[in-house]
Amino acid sequence: MESTPIHVVLADDVQLFRKGICFLLERDEELVVDYEASNGKELVAYLRTSKLPDIVLTDLNMPELNGVEATKIIHKEFPDLKIVALTSYNSKPCILNMIHLGVACFLPKNVKPAELVSALKEVYSSGFYYSNEVMRFIHENLTHKGKPVKSDFDKSYLTSRELEVLSLICKQFKTSEIADKLCISPRTVEGHRNNLLLKTESKNVVGLVTYAIRNNLLNFLN
Image: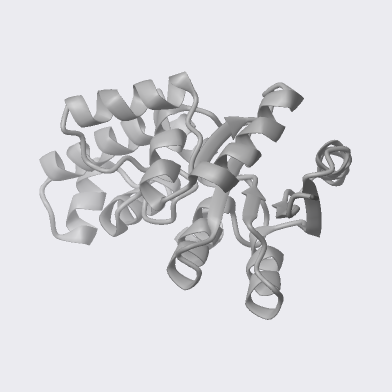
C-alpha cells in the first residue's frame, strides 16, 4: 500500500537554491513540491487561493515580504499549517523569534540533505522537529524567564521611538537636538541610542547608519 505523499510549498528568493531544494525533495517518493514562491508575498497569495500543503518551507530574508512577516500572516490565517524555516540566518535571536511565532522546525541552510528530508517527515508525523541546538536555546530562554525574542526581520524589532531616534541620528542631529525635537531628556536619548547599538550589534553611529541602509529603513525614516 502506497503512503500518502507529503505536500510541500517552498519560498526562497534565490532561484538556483530553490531549484536545488526541489530536486532534492522530489527524489524522495514521499515528498511532493506543489509550488515555488520567490518571496513571502507570493507565498501568502498562493496559500490564500490554492489547496493548502502539509508543510511550508521558507527562507527568512526575502524581498516584498520576508519570512518572519509571512509566518505571522500564515499562522494567523492558517493556524494548523506547519511551517519550517530554512535559512542562513541561524543566530539565537532568529531561532527564538521564529519558534515564538510558531514554526514547527528551524534549520540552517548548511543542514545535511538527509536531515532536511527526515526533518520534514518528522514535522509531518509528529508536528515538530527541533535540533539539539534549537532545544538548548529554548531551554536557556525558559530557564532565564526571557521575554519573547525578536530578530531584525521582525517589523516590531525596533520600537517606534527607537525608529524616531534612528531617523534623527541618520540626519546627523546631535543628542541635545534630538532631545528637543522629541521633547525628551538627553539622558533618554542616550538610552535609546544604547538600545539601538545593542539591538543592531553596531559599535558606533556609522554602524547605525549602515544598519538603516542595509535594512531599507531610510525610505521609512525620511
